Image (cartoon, rainbow, N blue to C red):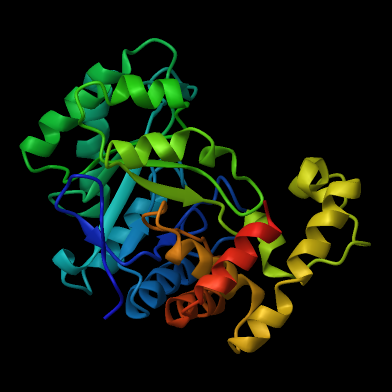
Length: 311
């Protein structure tokens, strides 16, 4: 049995490698997704020991939740940790960020209905709005926690100041934000605050859009309609530097009979500042490969080597 981590001050525990599901039913984010493949990805993740599924209303405007709800029927619900998120209010005909207590209460009920379950293990405010006091928003979620509808309270994509405002009464259990070996801004102030407050951290995009898999060569170029074409990580000298850094992980990967991506995921799993890391997948084979990271035990020297390489 893989080790378990506790989410903040809640009673929720999970294996430190979960599954991000924006490519499960997220047809608004990725073209050509098939429901059958999406459900197979979730089945494969759960069967491989990834206990936490991370979804959101924004992934297919509820369709990701619906597909996961169908898969959950094949498992003991209490063995699965389901995290969802909401903030996008479509009632006006366009997407407007909304963190009001009334909206969040409705969003949780809607999420429960789509997932066909009577509780969520984690519910995040997906993005901050500009007007709602963040402690009021979190207080509404804490009421839902007391009522048993959610088990842990989370916020996502919040600045440090917004996290502190949200946590004014000490009710935030978990923060989800972008973080990877290539994007380590959170280490300066956010992660020390979270550790001090006993708040868990869940990083998304841990493989940095594939950059930390070792699949790119420095001479590759991307067409103008490719999302990577405008991403600074994939341009010029920065891209060349990253490719060179990542290639230095190959001997380490070879020593563990693993891939570069698996070694990178193992680093997150062993990082004491990280709760659960949630790589996504568009193919079943990617889930199976990611799950093997749970079997890799980096030595302290190897952990430090990776840490220093990407400082």
